[in-house]
Structures are given as C-alpha cells and as structure tokens.
Length: 223
Image (tube, rainbow, N blue to C red; front, side):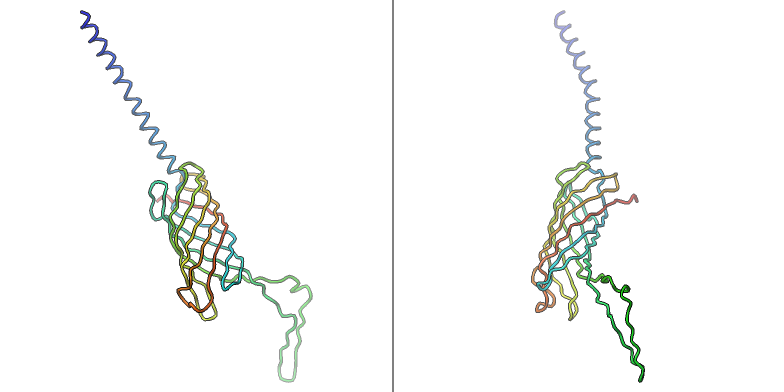
C-alpha cells in the first residue's frame, strides 16, 4: 500500500511539473523574441551626414564642409559593413574689383562701385576633394543607444592645375547612434583619414589627412 501511495505522489508531482514547464518555455521564447526585437531597434539601411572638415593638401591646411552618404551592405550580429561616398567643399574669398574701366574707342567709361556694395567679402563654395570606400562597423551594444567604432579604406581624388590627383586613405571613425524608431535613428561621429603617397600624379600635390566631425540621420525604408 505504501508503494502505491509513493508511486501516485511521484506521478502527480511529475504531471504538475510538466504542466508548469510549458508556460516557462513560452516565456523564454517571448523574452528571446523581445530581445531580438530590441537588438534590431532602429537599425538602418541608408544614412547621410554633414559637418565640418579639415584637410591638408601640398602642405596647405584648409577647412570646409563634408557631405557623406552611406548604405548598408551586410550585417553580422553587432558588425555591419557599409559602402560610402562623400565630398568636401571649402570657402574661398572672392576679391571684388573696386574699379573697372571699359575702353570703347576714344571713350573711357569708369565704374566706381558704391562703398556699401562690396563692403562685406564674398565667399565662393569650391570643390576640395571627393572620396568613396567601404568600412566595417562594430557596435558596443544592441540597445536604443549604440556607441560604435569603424575602420576601412577610402579612395580619394582632388583637383590640381594639371587635372586630378588620387590616393588611398585608411579611415577610422567613432560615434554614437540613437534609435528614434524602428526605421529611423540619428548619430554623431568623428572621422580621420590618412593619405598614402599619390597613385595618380605622383610628382604633384599630396594629401596628408582629412578629418571631420559630423551629425547625421539614418533610415530603413519599409519596402
């Protein structure tokens, strides 16, 4: 009789344990699904940045504005691979002529500009350099706020008197990305590119470095 009671108690306990184990498994599945959803929070496919840039070509340092567009190629866990392209523009002062003379036969017409017409210096936005390349990014976290670092290689070209020069430049950047929604995020970053010896026009100007501090947005369109 004692054996029968023990067997009955063990059977009831095992049945109760097996019934309570299923909801626990479901909760684990839900938690895993929610964590996977959080890991993909705000992860984007395209991005654009703009900011201030500094560069040195032929031992002359200048400052300008950087515009960069990038696209996601593939993603493995916290590592993602991107291709990007950008352009750096800079301001140069345009010195106006204060006096001009137009010769028409024996008649000379002088044109003195008013003092207030060119009282402020004008600036022209000029092309400095363009680049295209690829970088691998590593995210330190998968939450809403994601610090990251990146490294890659850029092909850079710039204009000189004899045409164009070009070189390769290893690049490194770091920043922080903040997810606003599942398909939109904003970020701030700093980048440094170091110029190798010229591959094109080796005996002309050379690129030393390019730096930039930029803000941007990234998004993933719902197709």
